[in-house]
Amino acid sequence: MPLFKSPISPHLSPNASKQDIRLALRYLITPWLWRYWKKGPHIVQLENSFKRDYPGSTALAVDSGRSALRLVLEGLNLKPGDEVVTQAFTCIVVPNAIRAAGGTPRFLDIDSTYNLSPEILKATLSKNHRITAVIVQHTFGVPADILSIQKICQDHSITLIEDCAHSLGVSVNSQPIGSFGDAAIFSFGRDKVISSVSGGMAIAFRKDLQKHLSNLEPKLPLPSLFWIKQRLLHPVIFSVAKRLYYVVNVGKVIIAVGRKLRLLPDVLSTQEKAGQAPAQVYRLPNAIAHLAIQQYQQLPKNLEHRHSIAKMYRANIKHPSQQIPPNSKPLYLRYSIEVKNQTELLKKGRLQGILLGDWYTDIVIPCSANHSDIGYIDGSCPAAERLATRIVNLPTNPLTSPTAAQQVINFINQAAS
Ligand SMILES: Cc1ncc(COP(=O)(O)O)c(C=O)c1O
Image 1 (cartoon, protein in one colour):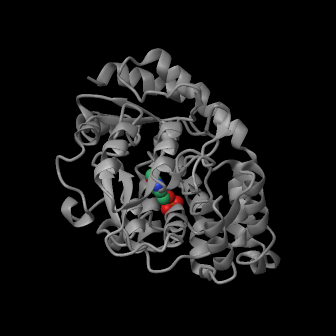
Image 2: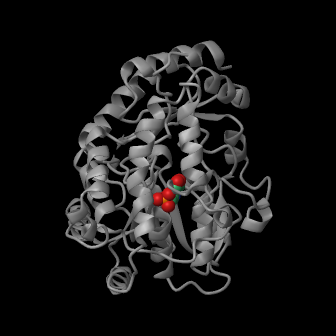
């Protein structure tokens, strides 16, 4: 392994540019900027960017995508027994948000786009009258059959929420994903399309949900200075750790020690993995919103890069991949392929400095609870269960160069079955 080789990876702070690292450092070391960690102009500036790009929406910037989803769901005033559809093959934070808002997750199966199947949704709605809302996820930036799902929800008069945690910048028929439902959420988490380490946006189009978000805006607390410091340190620590990753494992040690000393934030808490949403939702603080805006301004370049890398994978890798719906412009947050030797491939990759992604190797990850405890009945979503045993994701992020993508291709063609 070359000494100063950084791992090729869809995680490990995959979006942080030199500009982001400089901005984070400036906030950390410039005393006159410390008073702008919490409050400042960038929160509203970020919200205004979303209002501009999703015309007619109200926007609220919060500490994470999961918080945004929870707030939107809370606006539905769910009653005990009300069910909210989500797809199997998702992140634990989604059912956690449904339960925190007082609903019961109803997991439905996916189609070849790895998203909620409209046929299954339609069949389920004709039998089940406790379903009050549908969350449609556009997995890895490939849109669901949103026009069919939109029509089904309208026919049944139920709320449609788009989970765009993976799909900022995606469109169908030239209309942005996130503008087809009553509300939508976005994530600026560390390995999302754009990243401010943590962060999320809720947008709403329906009047009652708009009012709900507007009412919340002055009431949400800002997170602590400690919370903000962890996020500002993240790109800085990772930039050093990645360069030293294979220098007698110094980089790995830096990351492990950073986590142990709580200089770096956890992606999910132990409680979240066990099926419980965080106790508190926070407003996105100014310094972190500033990082998000800087990344948002780079979105077109970011998308173009992801497309060109995905094109290389598509042309050179023959394994089955996600199907793209017609008339859509996907983004490939991660380019996913289906293999027969998933566990072995992930391990072999690690040994060769290619850290492949494992979203999602279970119907819900990362989950330390029993499936039944989070409301999933084993065997109820066979397509999602099968996919979870086969999927691996390849990096497309801005730090993956064409040379690195070629290395990934060579590795997959030699090691994947
Ligand atoms: C499908 C999906 N929805 C929502 C989220 C929540 O995003 P965040 O990490 O910003 O809370 C995630 C996070 O990975 C996700 O994968």
